[in-house]
Amino acid sequence: MSARRQGRAVKKGRTDMSYELTNRLVLGVASSALFDLRESNAVFENQGEDEYRAYQEDRLDDPLGQGFAFPFIRRLLLLNDLADVNDPPVEVIVLSRNSPDTGLRVMRSIQHHGLPITRAIFTQGRSPYAYMEALNMSLFLSANENDVRQALGQGLPAGRVMESSFVDDEGDELRVAFDFDGVLADDQSEQVMQNGTLQEFHSYETANAVTPHSPGPLKDFLAGLNRLQELERKRLQDQPEYQRRLRISLVTARNAPSHERAVTSLKDWGATVNEAFFLGGIEKGIVIDVLKPHIFFDDQIRHLSTTTQVPSVHIPFGVLNEQP
Image (cartoon, rainbow, N blue to C red):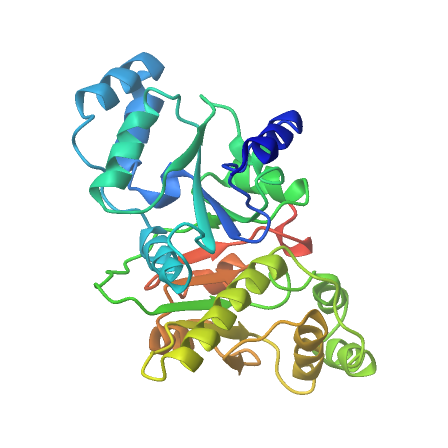
């Protein structure tokens, strides 16, 4: 950089070394989603903050075990090899209620597991979701239901990671599955369903088949995944032997004729999925057991109770998740 150009950059209050997040797929992940903190949390809840601090300091070099979102995060970060090492398309930032000193064990555990995560925010007990918009995040994953609900209440995309029996392997393929209503789309049609009959719901969706839904909490996250798939398409053009790694599925209780509006909405948003399952009341767990996604997003706990064999995320959004 010339001295004159560098001077202009400094006058504007920045340097060309600034790291921009605008064009990246940015995720926030709580330490409770990334690692298994059940034992640590028990110390905090039963013995208080001082004992928790001492507990983490004594185990600073004892790596935390993998949490329920770990397989998804690991595989997502592997897709950074689709671009220049200095310009990764995926950025994962830790958003943690830990204090900076207790967060040291989290950061050392990240290093131990070989995850390319270098950025973190530690808020010492405060909800960290307030920084999502500033950091261009299209998703925040946490095991803390209150944080997730508060984030969604502020119009921010967030999901609660559920416990799972999933055992990861060393593969690099990433399979992501979404429900539609209350996840990719808003829950306006779900409200029709709750206030009427199934037939009335189908009639409503048929009458509005050409009218796209308003986006739901995770629509922008899907758009970010689609950008990664576009990078894969370009890689395939340059390297015909390249094997695509990212696969996206739609798994919804909709069936014909209400399926058409879901497809119309995706097209209007410029979004795509590789496969769609319009199940019409068939238990989702049956399909999920075959599909084996590395993460599955749904707004209904009753569906997620059948998908504990894979990492699943509850999106507590909309009328079905209103608390009494």
